[in-house]
Every structure is written in structure tokens, then in C-alpha cells.
Amino acid sequence: MRILKNLWILAKSGFTQEVEKTFREKVNFLLRLFLVLLIFKIIYFTSTYLIKTIDAINFPVVSTEFEMDTYAGIYQFLILAIFLPIIEELTFRLGLKFTKWNFVIMFTGLTFISLKILFKLGWVTSITIGAVSTIVFSILLKKQILEKLTEFWKINRLVIFYFLLICFSTLHLSNYELNYSSLLYVPILFLPHFFTGLIFSYARLESGIILSISLHILNNALISFPILLTG
Image 1 (cartoon, helix red, strand yellow):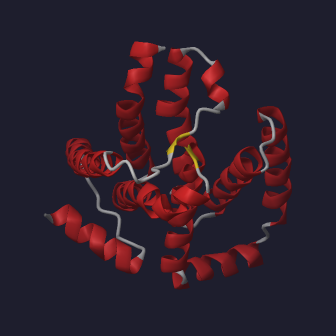
Image 2: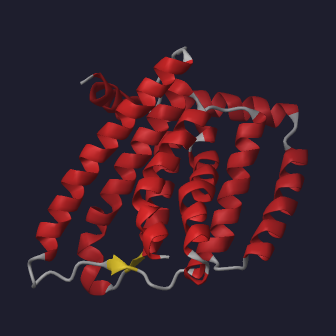
Image 3: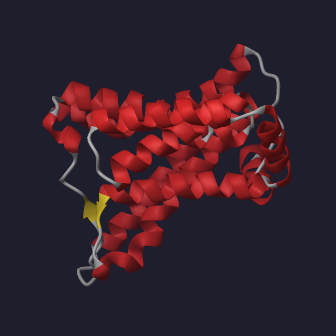
């Protein structure tokens, strides 16, 4: 399959050339990528289900201490299916191609996520500090610095690609209740987010950020749909 071949090339090089597509071709490309994601999820969930049936294995479970659990079902769905995909794509995929504002937006997202997830600050505090940091940061980005960053991006595409991909995958480990006895299974939890991040990156590089956001929204909407039924 062409998509799998291109994903392999992307994994080795960290870059793929953008291809001009008509709207119809983009929709077709989006659906084909979504189908690849579905097949992978079926394989992954079937495998993890079989692992969980072995009583001796202490497989990590999804954390029950989410701040958004206090929201009604429809709001949880909107956050998971729309808000988070947009934030994550702008943070982890937009910066794969360097421009000043792609870099600034990536910096803003990484700052916000670090404050909210790692330091567990409130929404208002995280947004305020992130906004102030972004303004100061964008002012400091003079022409000479931008030229050096542009050159750095060209030379280190693979490093930047895997830095953002690993950050994206690691971020999602915070969704699980991890302890010493379950650390052995961290790679199993890491793998699906790594693979989906690879596909989102492929979508972004070949067809633009709007397509990767759309694919991410489709993916999260599928996973979050039960919330609408039970919320």
C-alpha cells in the first residue's frame, strides 16, 4: 500500500514533500488515512484485550482523575473531539514546516501544555503565562535569529520530527494510572499514540495542517462518541 510505504519513508527521513491536491483528492486521502487508523486500532485493541485476559499481568488503566470529568457529556465530547485535536496539531505538527508564526504557535502550545499537564496549573494561569511568554518570545525573534532557525530546521528535519512525535506520544501517557509494576507496559501504551502521531504528521506534511486537524478530529470523535451516549 502506497500510504504504508510513504509512512516508512517519512519515519526514516522526517519529511515528505507537500503534494497539490484537489478538494476531492484531499477528502479521499483523508478517508484512506482514517481507514489505516481504524485497522491499526482494531489490531491494537484486540491485542491489548488478549493481554488483559492474562490475570498475572497488571495492565495500566485509564486514569479517573480528569479535570474535565466535572463537565457534562456534550462538553467533554467537544473538548476531546475538537478542542484538543486543534491544540495538539498546532503544537506538534504545525512546526514541522518552519516559518516564524509556525514556530511561535508551536512554542505557545508547548508552553501551555507544559504548564497545564506537567506543572498542573489552572487554565487561566496557564493561558496567561503562555500568552505573555509568546508575546515576549515573538518580539525577540529578530531576522538574524529566524535565519539561523530556518537553516537549523533544514539540517535537522529528522531530529525535529522525532522530538515533536515523541513529545506528542509521551503526553498521552498522562492519561493512564502508572505505577512501578506497570512500567513494563509503557511501550504498549506509547505505541498507538506514536503510530497515530506518525499518520497525523504524514497528513500535515503532504496535504497541510487543515487535513491533519480534520483527521485528528475524526479519530478523537470516534473514540469519544460513547461519552455522548453515557454523559
